[in-house]
Length: 296
Image 1: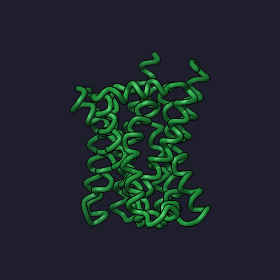
Image 2: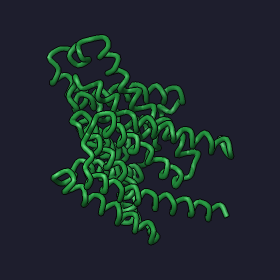
Image 3: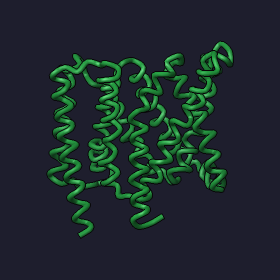
């Protein structure tokens, strides 16, 4: 799909992906009968089944087998899988422990760490407005220390692990869909081992009821569906547009944590987020002006 139709479907796919990521804290809260490692293990296994089905439907299984036979490719995918799993684990733990706002802060910061790591590892140059946005974002992080009474390690770890995941994915030789299947498959034995060792019986791994079991199985769909939308968006719209739309996710997380679950919003904390939003605004204006210039 190309042209206007492709661009329109790409924008809609991006909005769908970031909307789902934004509201997913409500879903993960329903899985609080499991520990965070068990939720991540279930996400991994059920996502793998869905991804294998997608590869079979698209007849891309040979690409997966060829990639897994290459030690270098398998090594990169294992590293990216570990980074993704650690990000998932911390995100789910934060959601279940009343720290959705810190999670939202982490995903607000993610694009700015992407810019920083792009400079460090790929020699990417940034314009003054982009550097100003990075500075404001870091100032917002500094304000979180008095706002929450400690170092905002949850937000920073989420941002750093997901940005490092992007760095590794950029280095990895496999494509996005095949690569995601490969890294999920490499993590699957660890996920299965965890569930076997941590569950007293098979029913315990599924919450002990049919309703809970349905929620567990749905974790695979909740993980994979936004990734499928995201993959379509990446192929059909500019990365600048994608980067601006990305802020929909943490914005929804922010309001869910604050208004829906009543997480505390103090004056310093609100000021911290205000600086982050200002950085986001500068980032968006710079991105849109660059996009208009490219079209001209």
